[in-house]
Length: 79
Image (cartoon, rainbow, N blue to C red; front, side, top):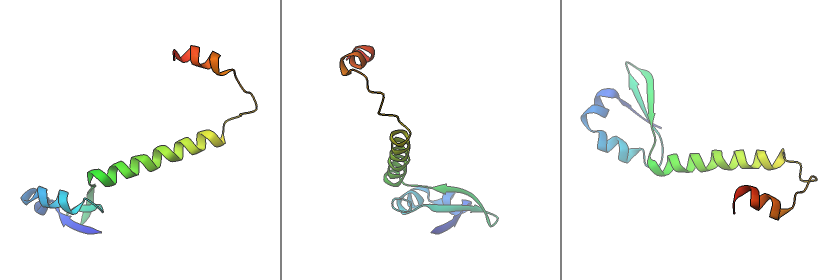
């Protein structure tokens, strides 16, 4: 992981954003981690992963033995 100082970030933020496209960049201030810069595509991948994990957990915790009529559900949802 690339590590840069806050001074380097201030001096050239576009470069840091470009570096963060595929892998996070660590921002340090006085040798302490202050932040991580994550590129847009990586951030979106992380969000998709988390949403998928939530969906998988919801399906695992669902009780499909109590079926409901599709027409009733569709009417409740207004579709």
